[in-house]
Length: 195
Length: 393
Image (cartoon, rainbow over all chains, first blue to last red; front, side, top):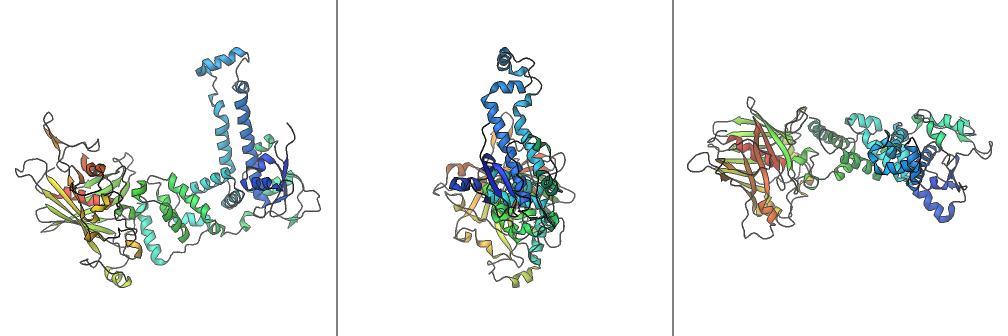
């Protein structure tokens, strides 16, 4: 592969990260900065700590890699045939695959391997404590990385399921600022909802 | 505590901490790397903050658009009960969460979903009916309204409303209430009263009071509507039955006058009143009423569709579209009684069944309602069908 352009990012706490341009451009914010001509110097990210930037780079790197894999597979179908672990790689086997698609070997999922793998990877990636989750969603919003914003927003939304109001307040450490009157009304509303 | 960042390995160990470790991704990564600092001496940074030291009040500072996105996702994914109580929980966390949730959640008319108790007094959807069923408890004289097509096997249905029948000397009453787990104040939201012979019924809408009616009067500056009961009950509808003269098991005629809904609600571009609060303390209640008060306009009138006599089956038939399976004189379909001279009423509105009620089993009945009726109004009208004395089941 030809050498790829590297972009230098600096977190709020002074840590330097060098990433490939394709990875950096997963962030629309950084992409626009590069387009505006700042790609050759250090790009400061004063709103993102090194700890979180590290994780974000991890995420973007993974997704760029997955997309490149998918692109490769669609361009060179014979590669897919090999992945599907055919016993013989003779050209006739390729025809067999086309004609008798039902006779593909056991691992039919090989065609879909990447999407479900990446979902699992994403699920493990976002399996973090609330504090990190908060920083991730705020940072991905600032950096405008849609995929990560969607992932973290959905993960937080999923946290609300099967939780009482008190539990939600505790997890997110939110103060109850209702008046006693409002509180009573809301408690009754909840009572109906949980009936 | 300071330390100097040198290499990938050190950073890896220092930073991850309590976060789950995934090493396999690093083995496959070739596309980017985290460069060591240019010179060991040049960068000094604070040690990675432990998660516990990070400001714990941070969630309160989450940008509004992000919080809105999160709550929208909750609303979208928890569409049916009982999971939908997550949306109610979000609205109960704090003021900002409540404001955002209330903005996101649409009325039953707009989305066909019931979310808050007030949804029960808001018009149903125009496109397809909201489907419910009623269970009758004969011994306790209690009728319960549930959301759902039919009772499920696991008994996991969403209970919406309950009504208790009280037989008095000169009339029968049904007290309709919100079923609350903790009943620390009256959860009555309405009443149905019959006349002596059980041919005419009046539906009353009651406002929820968190204090006794009297105190409620003094607390609000809002002028009470005329002729209202001190506990703020308003007459909103009447249901009348006419039995056929021969008193055979022929179909009876049923007519409803819904005083609280103007006829304009079914005209092109019309809207039905959509209250925003169950109690009378909130001053926003009048917001969504149509500009002309309902008393000055023609009220909505509904009539039952007359069944056809089926010669072969030897019975009166209505097309309930599978939602009613047991013959009973209680079964009915109501549609708008429209004077043909009334302008701007689409043909679809004239033909549409607004409320359908019928038996599917012992003590189980289905109730499907649409705009402009609300669940509460539909339930009250159906309850009248249980009390008509000159018929047996």
